[in-house]
Structure formats: structure tokens, C-alpha cells
Image 1 (tube, rainbow, N blue to C red):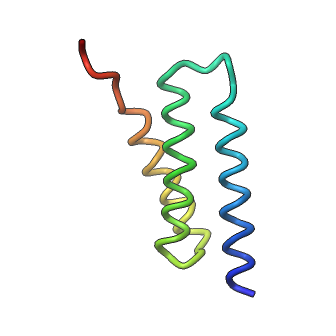
Image 2: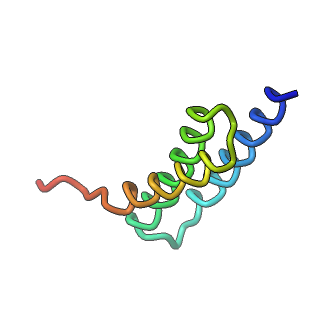
Length: 74
């Protein structure tokens, strides 16, 4: 039962991330923030064994990291 919950949570977060990252009106920084939050949520959930607190914490950390990602200078 725990594996089903974890799979469902991961799928929901992944679907939300893909939905947000497909927005055409987002700036690159907004897109990086959304992707970072999604990846962080999945990673946090996996690392804490499917914990919702881990997913929320991972999303917060991933969003901050994604927001700070900058395009390398040419």
C-alpha cells in the first residue's frame, strides 16, 4: 500500500511539473523555478520514503535553487 501511495504522489507531482513547465508565457527564471520545485518535490519524497513533509521541503529547496539558476555567460 505504501508503494502505491508513493507512486501516486510522485505521478501527481510530475504531472503538475510538466503542466507548469509547458506554459508559454513563463520567463526562463519562472520556468527554472517550477522545474526545480517539481524535481525537488519528487526527490524529497523519494529520499524520505514518501513523506509529504519531505516532498514539501524538497519543493521549497528545489524552487529556490531553480530560481537562482542563471544562463552561463557567452
